[in-house]
Image (cartoon, rainbow, N blue to C red; front, side):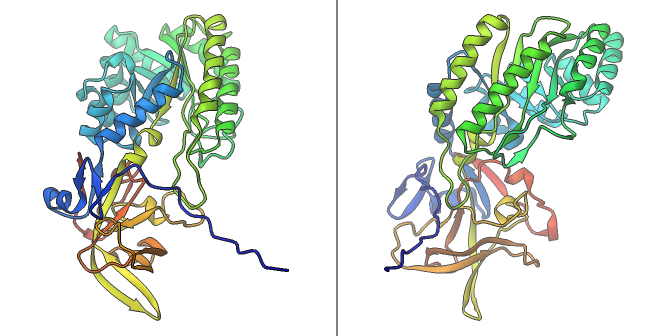
Length: 414
């Protein structure tokens, strides 16, 4: 019997960035030219046109009445947030610092919402003064906001973040279901709604976020349907009509070998059905989808320069000037259980036919500083540019840049 060759899974094609004369183009600019223009490596680069295209693709796939919010925790670079504010319907923030960036971007305060399990009194005061929607995550926040309302004469706008009694299946990171620090357990929400009514706060609706980084349309559809049913059930205890239901996000992007892009078509069809149901069952409610990674993740790259090439017992190492201190998630130390390679390329040798198996490491004195483990890449030398794709989300601000005192990274939007 003839043996069947089993091929290892490969990364999904990274075709979002064009290539010309053997170089990756970002914003239409050849990578080596961009590196010179930036003035240093390492750096993150985000492509404006790719951001715009992603929003356009979503708009085409989803019902027109669905509001699209950008969860800026994925990437709070001010210039990028300003760009996104002109494309989406609203911004979701997770701190007072992010709130300032969102307001500076020109986003409509009526379409800014604030979630987070540990909002300080100062942040609640900021949010109330700005007139944004505050997603309540505890009984303590209701009491604090009631005091702030009495002191200021302002009526805070609030929604309840619900910790649902289900999880988003196949989710990379579960944000709801079971014991969680996020939101208020679904079974406690009726009691919380009664407290909100007594406090005379401006209740508007519910925020439900079951999980993130999901590539299975059927799992996202199930979570959205369950979230809608839960909101319907809880609405019976609400002190006022439901005007707002944030169904969360969870849309993933392909990072690792074997992963494929999310199919939006069935998700859009399901949301069509939910919109129709809401029109009859919750006639005053707007449905919101909150996305971060899916909007910006594929539009960014991380670029570092090879500063040394060495061989150790038959294994070739490319030592770059950037590492886990700038891109923690690519090193596998930001939530991965088993480390897997992000898609990586030698950005100035995209057409090279000379290939080799190498490991790309950073300059830090730790074996954790690994950006690519035994990957087949174009043969590279000192001075070449290593590119890590899928780096537009949870990169720059999600990394320990002060670790070991190496120079900081920078970001550009082109």
